[in-house]
Length: 625
Image 1: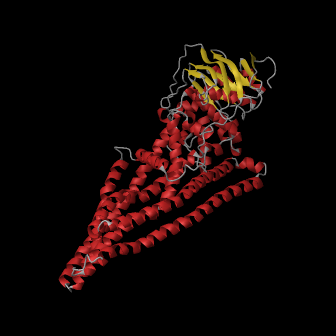
Image 2: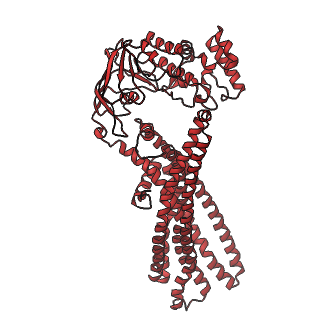
Image 3: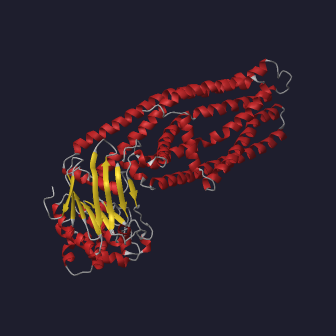
């Protein structure tokens, strides 16, 4: 584990940056924070006067002043009521501040995460940032929860120390504050050395917890595949290794916290005695020899020294929380640093290729940005693509052109770089050299379609806002692609073969699915139904690819780029989707290893798989390997 993960200047810088993002001006968090400051100092003001009450009780009890005792009781209860109210307001304000902090910080991270494919870089490219999802969800929560727990002490510490230092020096001279400051300095140095190893282990544990959660999610996602190949024993061993590693790190934290707690508790109890050692200085020097009520004077001045010592002790007490805060701050801060540095990188950091005509899409209106008058839809000019992870060339000096009336197929052996070409076209990877021109609206169809937890209508309209469209357009697409097959459960096979209308069939089947509690409570529109689990569980792989093709028909782009998009479809449905696109005037560039799809294309680009050779030929000539 890197030595940079400790309580140091980097920690302070990252924490300040997070604080600025979370407490940006003109937000609720900004006003709550500045409301918290006077509330905290009001609390300290009340604590000071309540702390002086014992010395006053000494006076009235010593003089047997019953009337003064009753008046003092009223004052005491008034101050206690005020302190209770102020402390409750402080707790409410810090809780509300945490909510606003988390909203601001998470919203900022989401805005950056979904901007310019940052989420792709973080999850798919080798950038050294593990588990970005966990950092945004769990680490942000733990960081801000810990911060709101210590923020009050951090806010009042400077003011309280200055005030009580003045009061202590006024009573005891310069020697009293110097002794207290020396005590605190020695305690801080000792605890800093004890904290830093804990910070590094907290960072390590969060990293391992992220991996542990990830392998559980992957098993849940591919449970059926694991069951088919009897993967229980293998996965059991892997899961046990992961939890063993986590608990070993936690054991290290527990052991190191033992020594930290010894240091903290030693300072706490020493501080309780130390305040009396300080007050003893003016007493034994004879400063209070002429005082009539020595007990009252000792009580009053002991409170001043004790509270100054207690203020320093309270900062030492939160050492364990600061250690945890530092670990979470480094994890979230690393993510923020990566996001900020990503926009400062030069284009030639990973290659010298370029893009002409960015692929753009209006996610609200479904209007594609295009220039349909241009005969060339997509062109790759002498493009070389290399892996961003290892020193490997996938394709060299590739020339590819998709023009009006031309559909192209890219084929080749597994791992030869077919999908890498599509990544370069989409600008997920930067080509090592060459130029990519895309003058028309283009949509991509990955092999594994992406579904969000939303309605069927939202899946088909994605990435456009479904609220802009009526159901009639969706119904037409469902009929064109025979998407009534989505609902072909065993008991409905006969209905599918009958002449029941698509919309009627789906209505009947959704009613049956409701009985099985597979969909959330009914909404106003048929196509606004949402599965309780997710679409991946509700649809077969072939049905998922059909819904993905329905997006193409809905948006009707000039060009669609298909990456093994028919791999789960039968020959009948493969022919159906290609024929539907062709009759609709949609051009396509396909990546496939299936020789049967060549008949739907005009040209074939064959990659040899050695990173050097490739060839272009008319479709229907030669064999596709």
